[in-house]
Length: 299
Image (cartoon, rainbow, N blue to C red; front, side, top):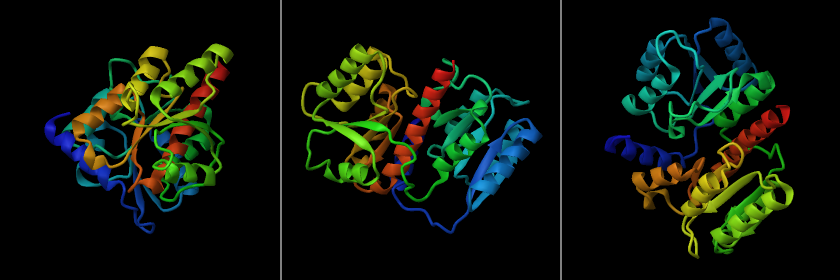
């Protein structure tokens, strides 16, 4: 990203903390070469998700034209487009059109992981495998459009890393109120040991999601912990999603935020101004983890 794009990215992340107008319709752009697929998805979304207006594009050029003229709350696209490679369109949306904070999803009947080397994960918010079914697809899309904190749909087990129990109290109160089970680790070293020991003893991953502060006591920062989980242990974004909590986004410049994402974070949330977004963000990431676990079990 260029400097202007990074600055805009930071501003849009901060602006996400402002609650949306519940009565304002949300616009969704569906990009797919297949008119039949677009018709089916449009019907599903309008039938099951209230207050949403669906727009469609069958080519990359048509999508760019629509994105240049209107603002959307969510963008989805297939891998197959007649006039461009899908990853080229994604990069153009993020860099040339400077649409940085709008969720962008790849929906495909193929392998759900992005092709390595083609597209950086920093540009894409998620991938969905259509073989999981229409009901799951609707739930996945709705999780990105929800404007109210939903009830917990799954009992994910969360590892929360925060060195100050007092400072973390508002977050843990939210987790308890919504019925999540969680374990709080006091530093990155403790959290890393818990994850490593789980894998040694059971051969599997006990935690469904990691939530961590960036500034921690001890030798390891939150970013060090994330990097070790992703590149040391080798747990991927879907296998163990990571939500980073910061006190104020304005205290981190765009370069610092990029480093956090580059280390392997899935998402970043502000503990003060964005606390109302905590449960929707957790649900999004737990949905991602559960989809990955279901696909892994099926194969």
